[in-house]
Length: 169
Ligand code: NI
Image 1 (spheres, protein in one colour):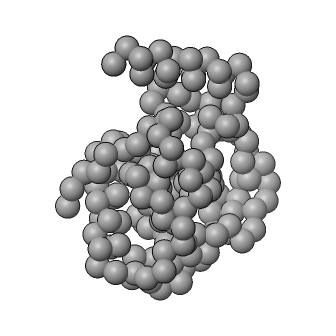
Image 2: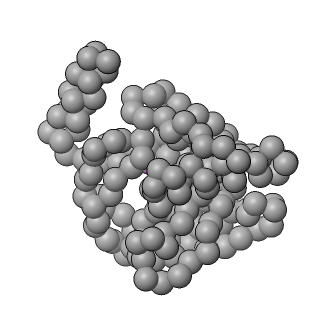
Image 3: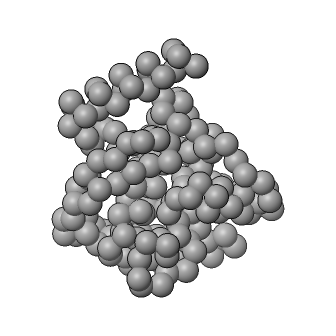
C-alpha cells in the first residue's frame, strides 16, 4: 500500500465532474486501499478519489475517530444520494483546503446507494457525522468544495491567502 498525494485547492482536478467506475478491478481495489491508508495518515474522516487526482466516482469514509456510534469503514463506488431530509449545520474542514473551516448547511439524514469494494450493491441510511461526510465526499465527486458554500467574504479571504502563499513558494 502507498500514501497518495492529496491535491489541494486550486488544483483543477478538484473541479472536475468525476466519471462513474465501469468495472471493479484489482487496480481499483488497490486504489481504494491506498485511499484508506492516505485518509488515516492525513488524518481525515473521508476522502474522495478526485482529492488524490483521480476523477472517478469513488470515496472512502471512516467517522469512528469522531463519533461514538460505531460504523464500519465505508468504501463506496458510484454513490448516489437517493433521498435526503432534515437540516443540520456543522463546522466542516477538508483535506483539500488546508487551514479552512466553515459552517455548512446540509441534510441531516441521507439514504445513499452505491457499490462496495467487491462490487456488491450497498444501501446506507445515515445521520449525524456519517450523513455529513457522505454529502461532503459526494460533493467532491461533482467538483464542489465547502469553499463554495462559505460566505463571499470568507471565500475571498481564503483565496487571497492561498494565492499569496502560492507566489511565495
Ligand atoms: Ni473534502
